[in-house]
Amino acid sequence: MQDTVVVRPRPVPAASQRLVCLGFCGGGAGSYLAWTDVMPPGTELAAVCYPGREGRFAEEFARDWDELAEDAVSAVLSAADLPYVLFGHSMGGWMAFDVAARIEERGGPAPASLVVSSANAPSRGLTPQDMFPAQADSDGALMDWMTTFGLMPEHVLDDPDLSEIALELMRADIRVRDSFYHREGATVSAPLQVLTGASDEVIDPRTGQQWRKLATGPFRHDELPGGHFYTPEVWQHLPDRIAALGAPGAMPDGSAYGKCSPAP
Image 1 (tube, rainbow, N blue to C red):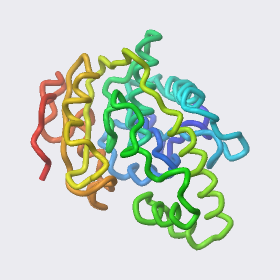
Image 2 (image 1 turned 90 degrees about the horizontal axis):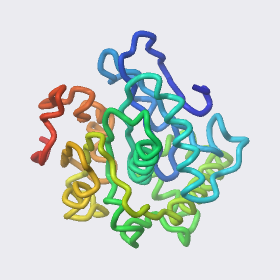
Image 3 (image 1 turned 90 degrees about the vertical axis):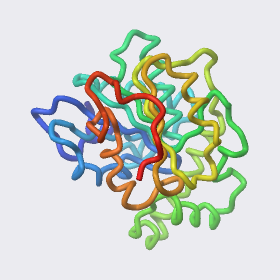
C-alpha cells in the first residue's frame, strides 16, 4: 500500500481484518481518521485518498466516474492483503458498490462485506434528488453546504487559501458525480449493509427494497438517527453500527442480515 493512496492512520500489525473507506463528495481520507479510536480489536482502519487532494495533491483530479472508479479499484486491491470490509458514504457509497462489483467481476479478492451509507440505490440512476450540491451553486452556497453538512474542519474555514482548495476539490467531485451511471447488470454477492438517516430528505423511501435487488447475497438495512451525516454522536461511532465489525446483533455466519428495525 502507498501511504498517500491508502492512508492507515494507526497500523495494526496483528490485524485480522481492515475497514477500507471511500470518500464522499468533497471529502478525503481525513474525514475518516477519527474512527481510528473506535475500531474494534483486530481491525485496522484504511482510508482511500482520491487524486487531487491530501497526499495526492499534485495529481490531476479524475475526469469522470470511470476514471475515479478504476483508481479506487487499484487502491482497494492494494489493501486487500487482509480480509476487508468496504465502506462508502454518500457518493462514496455508489463508488464502494461499483468498486466491489468491478472487483467481483474480475475474480476478486472481493470484500468480506460491503457497507453503503446515506446513498440511494444506483440502479435509480443520477436524479435531481441526488445532485446536491450542484455545479451551478455559487462558491458561497458550496461553502455553506460544506460547513453545514460536509464535516468541513474549522481550520479550513478560517483559511482563505484552504477554503479555495476545498471549493476546487468539491467542484471536481461534483463533475465526477454528475458523470455517474449504473452499469447494467452490476450486482454484488458480498453481504451488503445499507445505512440511512431517519431524517435524510435525500433518501428515497423505497431505498431498502431498491438496494436489495442489487444484492445477490445477504442483505441488511439499518435506519439511524439524524440526517445525511446522521447525528454527530452516531457519525463519530459509526463503525459500531457495522455488522461485519461486530455490531450488536451481528453473527459471524451472516445470519444477522435481513430487514432491520430503525436503530435506537
